[in-house]
Image (cartoon, rainbow, N blue to C red; front, side, top):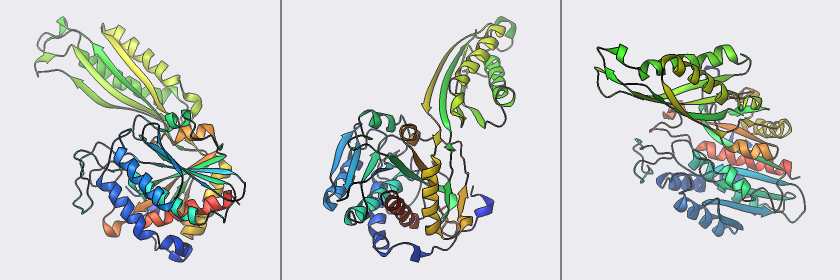
Length: 404
């Protein structure tokens, strides 16, 4: 749902977008739609990678392929020494069957660009195109990182481990996410935490099955599971400081094979989200304590598998202020800058931001007038492609100011 205070789609002042970038719009749309037609899942983006490499080769931009399997890094060096800025775009799609009836709908059954990564990649390519042709207008180097597997299991950490932030060493990094919770012409920026840490768990509960009419002969795994689900919510309401926003969600619960049978086994899966990095390690311990206590009370046993997926996305104030100043010039009015915005969605851009200062921001892409308001990960997700122009303009503006 679009936030009520910014419900209407503003008119775009195209005079704020430089002519050379306006001329890129047909390319941006073409690139985005071609990517949309051929979506691929994380670490399987071979066709996507070849497409990106072909465009970079045609432009003349030097780049390396095969980083963390399918990742690509393009390097644009100025003739003058200076700082090194990285720009990151994710390239993977989701295991979703597309329901849009579009000439460029997904041709890969069960796979869809339902989160805007096709747009991120097109914006990064457009930024590379512009900066390459204007590489004598700034100092230093721009590295553009095309990262696989953001949706899962995460391509940022492997790319870092393979030296993507080295040779030359990157001083700062920026990235964006098209955001259908905001209308076109709006930018969400936070100095500090923007997106949440993501932790996950699977829990198997082992009881004793039996007849539904004789529960005294059983250990009902469904009852044990229900008690655990209720108790987990007390972690948020009673254990964590209410000023530290936290979410614990049990998204799956599977048990039983018949309406008159008491299930001997129940399985649940869930996720934990929070912003405060100091809370890492707390939730797995507390969940284990609750599960152990309840299972012991009811005479059940359990197996808990808990893992950390992504840390929180925490923006550097100096870089966030720089991005905000550029975005203000592009969207024209301060009411289109949503400051201090946060979302419990997770993102592995966080691993880059743990290594170097940077800013990840949200670029409004919804348009009610065109019916483009479906949320991310929806089988009819789509966005206003005018956002591609705005994304390139902001990326270029930040690059020029950082590397001046």
